[in-house]
Length: 333
Ligand SMILES: Nc1ncnc2c1ncn2[C@@H]1O[C@H](COP(=O)(O)OP(=O)(O)OP(=O)(O)O)[C@@H](O)[C@H]1O
Ligand SMILES: [Mg+2]
Image (cartoon, rainbow, N blue to C red):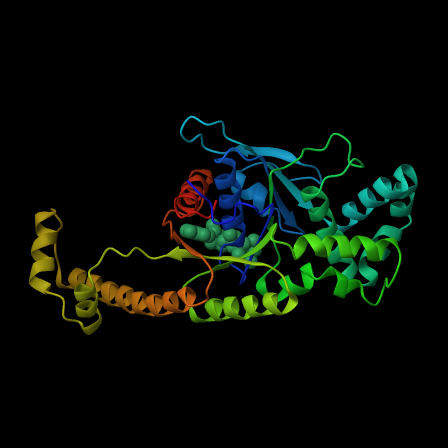
């Protein structure tokens, strides 16, 4: 099976709050692992969403093995590791990697210097977070014994924050105009702007998140950052015919037929029950019409799009694998 993003090493997953960024990032990591890739799934200052989804203890600032991809065609599956990145730990690690400030770094922490440095300028926090992501993608000899991943998936900040988050040069512009920090920021931007990065959007088929997705894509284009695909999440089942949907909307469904179908199924039928079902059918049909309109807008965005069903029982590890298979079938991984 071929992927739409073969050369991509860093998959950034953004979207409006609550649309399913964390869920999709996890599913994408599993989908890539099913291709035999070793994957790092990162969250930045999250609320331990990864640990919750995979039902493991809260993640430390260390790469933990959390899952393997499903084996497909007998090919060996890759492993998914997870990492929870916080700015303070990222700064400590940076200081020890580049300035060998192991113990001295811990002293700085005790005196509150680390906290001071990470709160003094909001941009600095972002640069520390993205810096660690960069390090995971572009491992170098300073991080001895670290795993070389085939792909990194980032459960990223929401749409409104994603462009400044990745635009580290801009964030640092007022702080470091020359010198090593400036050089490192420039190197990070080279990766983030390259075809080895893709920024994917998650949306649901509602007006606000779809509009935010369109705006987000425009902002990335302006900033010269690579737009990936759009994952349409929580899609309602589409098993009714157009004709039936129209009838449901107009209150024109056949009451008698519904009544007799229910009776055949052994249900004790009352007028109230039929009325309730007709109301639900109308509600569903109206939402379906709204979703179809939003789907057309997504298709018009000029990037690949993928759909994931709304799973009525919620999300557990099994459903993450199910969503991963759906992403793979559609060529996202
Ligand atoms: N396809 C789906 N089917 C059913 N439930 C889903 C689906 N995708 C996500 N959910 C549920 O929707 C809720 C929000 O999902 P998730 O936490 O992934 O969103 P998010 O965009 O990361 O949110 P936040 O902005 O808070 O980080 C969760 O309870 C999740 O289990
Ligand atoms: Mg989340």
